[in-house]
Image 1 (cartoon, helix red, strand yellow):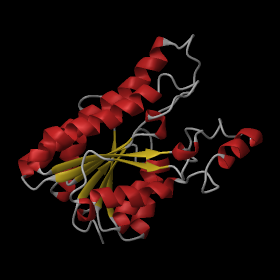
Image 2 (cartoon, helix red, strand yellow):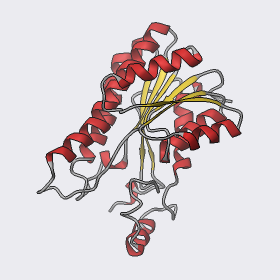
Image 3 (cartoon, helix red, strand yellow):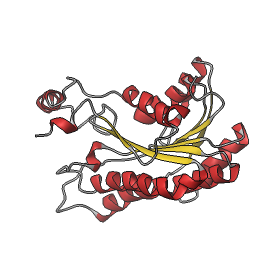
Length: 250
């Protein structure tokens, strides 16, 4: 029970990686605040089945007020904020030369601005509590490599990683650790349509040394580790969770 008694906020926690992380934290004894945009019934049911405690907060992560809303919910229901997992993100694939302004703007607001706002709100609460905390941002292998249809997305993921590096410096004096995880190709709703093509799916699988695409649950363990006291001297780090994809890109 690596997170017993801790309160964890997970943004984008109703599906995909966020859902797996929320359940994984609950399995390790955490109380979980699930931030979601549309529905959270399934993840709440998953946590309830294992005897965990969770509340859901519907919100738009791009709204600067959402961070405070989530912190207040955590304090109201569970008394503290000990861990933030900033996971919410979108990737509407689009070509570069005709990128609509609204697609670029929304991607930036959700992925990068939203991460900044919620990190700031959680960090202020952790500072006031006086016992430190852990912040983990879900970046991406896309922070390190390019993508033809991701010219609006890859900069946000590089920015999220950079945000954690700078926050590690800014918040270390308060005992707040800030790290990022960089998933490779994970089977989620974001890339479901893109990987529907059998040839592309096979191509992606063949590039990964471990021989398969990632599943959302593959992120739960690394996030729990970084959130726990097992990583008490780890801050400003980036952990690739990609089955070896990055080192095989040659």
